[in-house]
Length: 269
Image: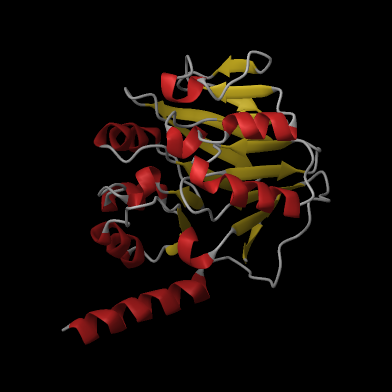
């Protein structure tokens, strides 16, 4: 029985790699981007999540800063890109796995503004300096980070988790900050569709459901690592059954999505 099931999953994975509109290359492009280009860089770190958005408008944004255990690796990877300054930091969650290196990032990369929902929680407040500007984002708001890069605040849970919908040209990224049913209901009502889906809560819950996956219709899913935790097996099976290309960053390494106005390319590192 296990052999049969394994063969089925191999078949699913083989088929999806053929039919998905993705191209793969040996190495990602540099940060020397044209105005009509952007990069979404999902960092593979020991613990927690962080994503860099680099644009051809010379605007760079960091989404979360992972946990303190990832400080060295995060700085190493950002420096490897040759990046000297980050324009803004977006905090989708306010706990140590998402804001653990906020002060270090602000100081080292001269970040002048932090975007978050409401007042910074006590778990993250000690990471924010008085000199850093804070901007509150509210549910259903839309913001233009550059003329071509837009972000919508899809849902803010009662715990303050802020899920976001990024668009650049024809490419969209749904960045889930939670894995609870409250978020699922809101997303079903929104009718959003996204090529890229960042799974919330480190894929520890049963969300997204099959119904939500069918509604969002993503091509690829990103899963960040959390120390002492493993992804929910039922969720992983559901993602594979939906012919979604699953990227567990702990296994595949830092992954870059290179966007133009018309398409995107994926670069496993």
